[in-house]
Structure formats: structure tokens, C-alpha cells
Image 1 (cartoon, rainbow, N blue to C red):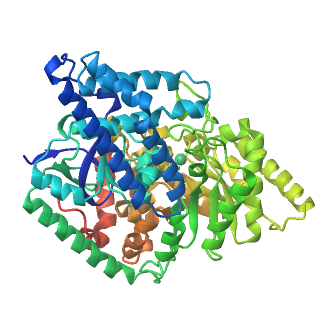
Image 2: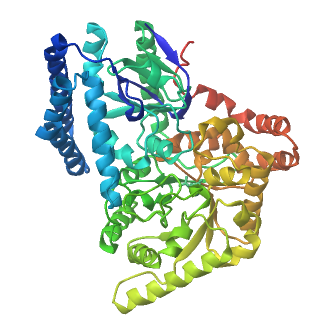
Image 3: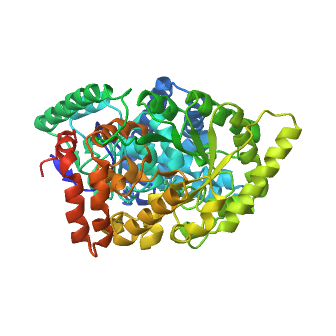
Amino acid sequence: MRLILEGSGASRGMALGRARLEQPSRFLVDNTPLAQADVAAELVRIDNALALARAELKGLRDKLSGPLAREVAEFIDAHGLILADPEFVNGLHNLIKDGRFRASAALKMQRDSLVAVFEAMDDPYLRSRREDIEHVIGRVQGALSRESSVEERKLASRVGEILVSDTVAPAELVPLAEHGVLGFILTGGSTLSHSAILARSLRLPMVVGSHQALAHLRDGDLVLIDGDSGNVIAHPTAQDLASYRQWQRDVAQQDKRRARLRDAETRTLDGIEIHLHANAEMAADVARARSFGAAGIGLFRTEFLFLQRRDAPGEEEQFLAYRDLVLGMGGLPVTIRTLDLGADKADSAGLVLEDEPNPALGVRGVRLSLRNPQLMRTQLRAILRTTGYGPVRILVPMVSAVEEVITIRRMVDECATQLRKEGQQIAEHFELGAMIEVPAAAIALTSMIRQLDFVAIGTNDLVQYTLAVDRNNNELGELYDPLHPAVLRLIAHTIAVCRRNRRPVTLCGEIAGDVYFTAMLIGLGLTEFSMHPGLILEVREVVNALHAGELRKIAPRLLRATDRAGIDAVMHRMRARMSAIVENAVAAPPIDC
Ligand code: PEP
Ligand code: MG
């Protein structure tokens, strides 16, 4: 029966697929002992489920393509080996035959003992591979509990999978996308998490905070997810499917209309040029940035090179990745951010401190790099070596004190001297910038600005740290407010200090690509934005309908407003001119509750 589950939209768009539940921590286990007469049937059930899981893995492997195919194939093979391991399979059989456990209970017992073995390992990489066990057993468990109508199964077999889980780590997203996952329904998560950012980058719809999803969905259920409204429909009706098809047609039309803007300028009605750069997390973003007419890469998040691997990448590997990025942008400016590991971007290479009591306030970003000078030098050398291939800027995350910038500047200079001695062709001068994402850095910017060539405002973290609201905690969603008067003042102050000191300033948090905020940011004097490549045309369309002079006149009222109602009223005035465009934009049709 049709069922609607509510959540929050974290990555836009719709997807139709069959649910794949990943609920390692809440196995639905039937613990009632088996009667002797049922043992044979239960053995057949577990064997069928194992066979189905193996067939699914083979199907996924056959579908692999793209640059990560080899790596992902290794994952799949590792999972296949677990399923074929005689010790594992015999263990299940023995539990059913001798222990009279039902298949689901036997599976859970096998999982618990295997996970315990992995958790006892000293090597952090091997320890983290317990996830493989969870994935494999989750797949067999799913196969065991499959229950849907024949028609639905037929339709579901033709569409890909939608992952239903408590959370998903940023490092898991790319392999999952390569496995053919079409979208995500998470019971936890948040719209600002790095997983959500990556899902947007991969253009995979994601719904977070869908608390009831694991309890109400079953493996194989046909689900329609709406990453705009945050709603999920299980067992959609013919009417739901028709509105999904209509949405697909509307998106295609809209893409066609916006495609005309690819080579257009981004200029307000009164002639102010606005530069729209792209945020990039992976190589594929470069092609997207070019195809959407980005002015450059405004933020390359290098930490994604460090995730889901055993060792940190060496200088040569990093150099090749950054060089391809720079070459791919064909002479347009590229801003490479040094490592921002920590908080929700944990790693497998053992760089992040384990069990920090408060990781978001802990050894993250530049703090981690300064504790590992060799790691930092390797990365700086790799970045500096690309400066001979195109305009490259170096951006430092999580800066809270001017001393950090001074130390990094010194390291950059030392690395440059060394590289020149080695005969490497590198640029004469390097631009070094800081992310302004810690309130202290924004407040004390005047004392830091002389050390900086440019500034990037990271509102994702600036909001989190100013308001003391965890960006990864969806329960606090309402409190996470980029329009809070304190946040607005910090953004306005940062832009004003940069303009006064003639330093370029970009804003690269998620609000840069959200047309709700475009007029406000232009009103505050921002002319450089960096966003997901897929949002550039939408923002360009809006910018071209705005009058910067008018907005700048209204902006002081925004800063004088003392509460949200006052701010909303000014926002309303600022957005009036562009509202027709925004309202015409295709959002997923609201799912009718
Ligand atoms: C930010 O904090 O706004 C930002 C762009 O950095 P990240 O989202 O990677 O923390
Ligand atoms: Mg940040």
C-alpha cells in the first residue's frame, strides 16, 4: 500500500528505485527456535538468499564502468569471497542444523562474531573493513526478507537501488554510486553534511532525517524519492509514476533552456560582472564545471583523495591529480584547498585522531596539517608543482589565528625554494588564502588580511561555529540558520574588510549555489561565488535579472534588522525582482500527502 515518509531534502531531484536496506545495527531477527521438521526448508532459504546476494554482486560487477571500475570491482570481489567462504557458509548451516537457529538469527550470529574479529585488529584500515562484513550480511539479510508483489518486483528489477540506511559516510558515496545506487534515504544525516555535499556533486537525490524509513520499508520495495521536498513514497501509484515522468520531462526542458546560458556572461542588469566558480570534489567535476561555463574552480576539496584508502597519497599521485585538474580547466583559475580532514571527514589512512571527544572542535583542517608537517609539505609540493600548468591558488581551511597563516606561508616558501633547487618549473608568486569559517577569523580578519592574498567564506562551517549548531545534526535543522543576524554580520564584515583591503573574496559554502540567497549576497557586495557546477546556470539566470545597485542600497537594512521577521521582510524585497524566475524553476512536484 502507498506510504509516505517525511524527511528533509538534502540533494535535489527525484529517483525511482528499489529499496536496499542497510541496517546492520537493527537486524530483524526471529529468535524462536526451529522445529526439526523445518530445518531443511530453512537451509534452502539461506542458500537461496546467499545465491541471490551472489547474483546481485555479479550483476553489479558486470555493470561497472568508468575510472573507478577496477577499484570497485575489488570491493565487490572481496564481498563475493566472503559469501563463498566455506567457513562462513558451513557456519550458517551448522547454526541452523545443530543450533536450530532460524536463518536470520544464524546470519546475525555470524555477523557478530566476524565483526568482533575485525574490531579486535590493531591495523585501523583492517578494522575499518568490518564495513564489508556489514554490507555483505546486509545484502543476504535483504535477500532473506524480500517481500513484495510480483508486479512490483518486475518493475523494481528494471530500476536501480535506493540505499536506505541510518547514515552514509562521505568515503562510501563514490563506490556506492559506482555500484549503481540511484539515491539515498537516511534516517539520520543532515542537509549540510559532507555526504550530502558529495551526493549533490554526484547528482544523486538524498533525503535525510527520514526517521521511519528503516522501520517501514522493506528490501525490494519500489520507492520514489523527492530530494527537494524530502518526501519518500513507498509503493507509488500510477499517478505518482506519471508525475515522476512529467518531472523528468520538465527537467529536460529546463536543461535545454538553461543550456543557452552556458556561454553567456554573468552580469547584473546594471553591468556588474559576477564570477561563478565551481566547487569540485572529484575529477568528474572538472568536465561539469567546463560544460556549465564556470569561471574557474573556486574550491577543490582535496581530502576526498585521502578517503577510503590505506595510506595517504604520495606527492606524485597528488601532483598528477592536481595537474589534471589544472589542465582540465584550460587556463581558468583553480583554487586548491589543503587537507580538511577531521570531523565528519574521517579517513582510513589513520591520519585523523580516533575517539576525539568533540571532533568538529578538534584536530581538523589546518590544525591536522600543522601537526603533520611532512604530510603538509608533501601536499604543498604537489600543489606548487602544478603552478607551472595554469593559475593556481592555495587555500587553507579552518584557520582561526594569524599564526597559522604565517606558518603555512613559511612552509610554502620553503617548499618553493626546494622545488626550484630541484629544477622544477614553478610560478614566481603564489596566492595564499584562508577559509573564513571560524567566527574568530571573521572577527579578527583586519589583523590577518595583510597575510592573505585572497579569502574564501565557508558558510557551511561559519554557521555551525557561530550558532553552536552541529551541521551534521538534522534534529537542529531549524536552528542552523544562515540568515541569523550574527551570521549575516560576519559575512558582511568579511566582504567589507576584503573590499577595503582590495583582496578578492569568494563565498563557497552551500548558500552560494542556492538562488534564495543570491540577491542578498550581491547586496552585501559579493561578486565571486563558488558552487556545485550543476547550479551555475540557475544562479547565472537569476544574477542576470538582478540590479546590484538597488540591492546594495537595501542591504544595510538587512544588517539593521534585529530579528528573523525583519530579515525576512528585507529578503522579500531583495528577491522580488527575481521571484518570477525562481518560481518557474522546476522543482520536484510536491508529493501529495
Ligand atoms: C564551508 O565550510 O562552507 C566549506 C565550503 O567547506 P566544507 O563544506 O568542505 O567544510
Ligand atoms: Mg568548511
